[in-house]
Length: 79
View 1 (cartoon, helix red, strand yellow):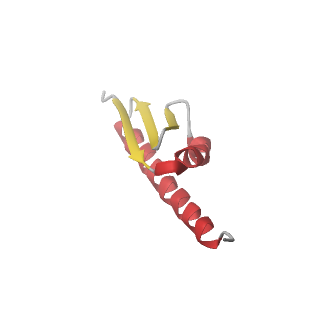
View 2 (tube, one colour):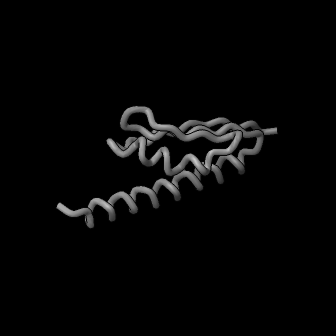
View 3 (cartoon, one colour):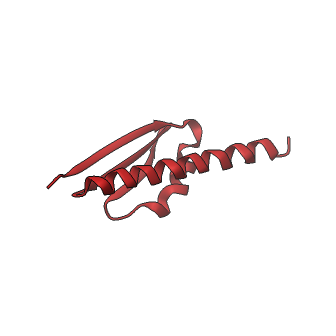
């Protein structure tokens, strides 16, 4: 049986804590996302390699959406 464990660190800047909070609902017993300084750290541990791939795919799709929302908020915020 394959065992998959992985960690991805993505530099997202000062919004790391905000993005991490937005991704928290997606954390399961075998997944974790958290902010470390300007990085978003995503960890997945599973016995199913396909589940690991799907887990990271979900995190990256939600990361992309969170960044889009933050950008839209910045563009429409009163000056």
